[in-house]
Length: 87
Image (tube, rainbow, N blue to C red; front, side):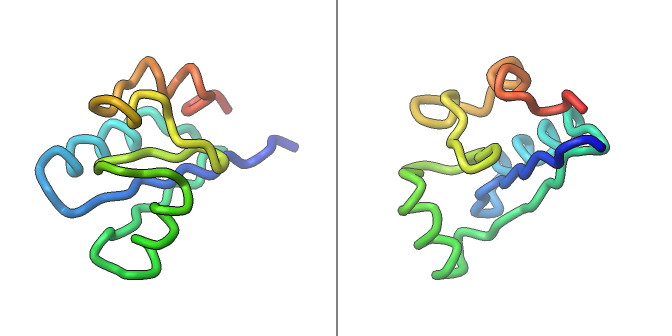
């Protein structure tokens, strides 16, 4: 049995967020559970703060903020290095 990978995309609905969501969806494999979270929801914003998210879009894989999301834009290679798309 393959372990499931939890992938969360924190989004504010902007065009950059939409592009990040599409990148994650394009890379995701059948064992990736992708969840899109709306930063306009106070509960989601609180969760983002707890994870150390200071900008959107941001991608969290299995509870870890992707390194590319700390200082720059969502990067497919960084997400793949964290296991996204590796079933």
